[in-house]
Image 1 (spheres, helix red, strand yellow):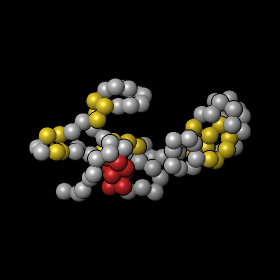
Image 2: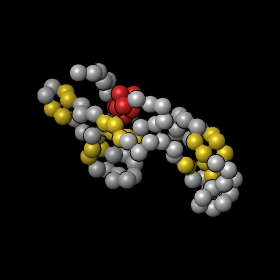
Image 3: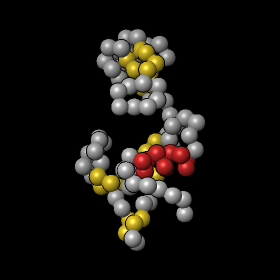
Image 4: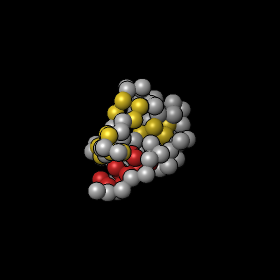
Length: 96
Protein backbone atom coordinates (compact mmCIF):
# COMPACT_ATOMS: atom_id res chain seq x y z
CA UNK A 1 0.00 0.00 0.00
CA UNK A 2 1.40 3.35 -0.99
CA UNK A 3 -1.43 5.90 -0.82
CA UNK A 4 -4.30 6.58 1.56
CA UNK A 5 -7.68 5.72 0.07
CA UNK A 6 -9.27 8.47 2.19
CA UNK A 7 -7.11 11.51 1.42
CA UNK A 8 -4.58 10.27 -1.21
CA UNK A 9 -1.52 11.08 0.93
CA UNK A 10 1.42 8.71 1.36
CA UNK A 11 1.16 5.99 4.00
CA UNK A 12 3.84 4.57 6.29
CA UNK A 13 4.15 1.04 7.69
CA UNK A 14 4.54 1.72 11.42
CA UNK A 15 3.31 0.61 14.84
CA UNK A 16 0.55 3.09 15.74
CA UNK A 17 0.43 4.53 19.24
CA UNK A 18 -1.31 2.09 21.58
CA UNK A 19 -0.84 -0.85 19.20
CA UNK A 20 1.70 -3.68 19.08
CA UNK A 21 1.70 -4.51 15.35
CA UNK A 22 2.83 -2.70 12.26
CA UNK A 23 -0.01 -1.18 10.27
CA UNK A 24 -0.30 1.10 7.27
CA UNK A 25 -1.02 4.59 8.63
CA UNK A 26 -1.74 7.69 6.57
CA UNK A 27 0.94 10.35 7.01
CA UNK A 28 -1.67 13.12 6.72
CA UNK A 29 -5.08 12.05 8.07
CA UNK A 30 -3.60 9.32 10.34
CA UNK A 31 -6.18 6.75 9.25
CA UNK A 32 -5.07 3.26 10.31
CA UNK A 33 -5.57 0.49 7.76
CA UNK A 34 -6.19 -2.77 9.60
CA UNK A 35 -5.40 -5.79 7.44
CA UNK A 36 -6.72 -8.80 9.24
CA UNK A 37 -9.17 -11.59 8.59
CA UNK A 38 -12.78 -10.74 9.36
CA UNK A 39 -12.98 -13.58 11.85
CA UNK A 40 -13.78 -12.80 15.47
CA UNK A 41 -12.63 -14.93 18.39
CA UNK A 42 -13.92 -14.58 21.91
CA UNK A 43 -14.35 -16.27 25.24
CA UNK A 44 -16.98 -16.91 27.85
CA UNK A 45 -15.13 -16.22 31.11
CA UNK A 46 -16.63 -17.95 34.15
CA UNK A 47 -15.72 -17.22 37.77
CA UNK A 48 -17.37 -19.08 40.66
CA UNK A 49 -20.15 -20.23 38.35
CA UNK A 50 -20.91 -16.74 37.04
CA UNK A 51 -20.30 -15.52 33.48
CA UNK A 52 -18.16 -12.38 33.52
CA UNK A 53 -18.85 -9.49 31.14
CA UNK A 54 -16.68 -6.57 30.07
CA UNK A 55 -17.80 -2.97 29.70
CA UNK A 56 -16.59 -1.64 26.35
CA UNK A 57 -14.04 1.17 26.66
CA UNK A 58 -13.96 2.02 22.92
CA UNK A 59 -16.35 2.53 20.04
CA UNK A 60 -18.39 0.98 18.63
CA UNK A 61 -20.89 0.61 21.47
CA UNK A 62 -18.78 2.42 24.06
CA UNK A 63 -20.05 1.64 27.56
CA UNK A 64 -22.06 -1.45 26.57
CA UNK A 65 -21.55 -4.84 28.25
CA UNK A 66 -20.01 -7.62 26.14
CA UNK A 67 -17.97 -10.80 26.23
CA UNK A 68 -14.19 -10.45 25.66
CA UNK A 69 -13.73 -10.81 21.90
CA UNK A 70 -12.01 -9.23 18.94
CA UNK A 71 -10.86 -9.58 15.36
CA UNK A 72 -8.16 -12.13 14.71
CA UNK A 73 -4.83 -10.90 13.39
CA UNK A 74 -3.02 -12.37 10.38
CA UNK A 75 -1.06 -15.46 11.40
CA UNK A 76 -2.91 -15.81 14.71
CA UNK A 77 -4.75 -18.96 15.81
CA UNK A 78 -8.25 -18.77 17.28
CA UNK A 79 -6.81 -19.76 20.65
CA UNK A 80 -4.21 -16.98 20.50
CA UNK A 81 -6.89 -14.46 19.51
CA UNK A 82 -9.19 -15.54 22.34
CA UNK A 83 -6.36 -15.35 24.89
CA UNK A 84 -5.40 -11.90 23.58
CA UNK A 85 -9.02 -10.74 24.00
CA UNK A 86 -8.99 -11.95 27.60
CA UNK A 87 -5.63 -10.27 28.25
CA UNK A 88 -7.28 -6.85 27.76
CA UNK A 89 -9.49 -7.60 30.78
CA UNK A 90 -6.56 -8.30 33.13
CA UNK A 91 -8.04 -11.73 33.90
CA UNK A 92 -5.96 -14.90 33.78
CA UNK A 93 -7.25 -17.50 31.33
CA UNK A 94 -6.81 -21.22 30.95
CA UNK A 95 -8.31 -23.76 28.58
CA UNK A 96 -11.12 -26.04 29.68
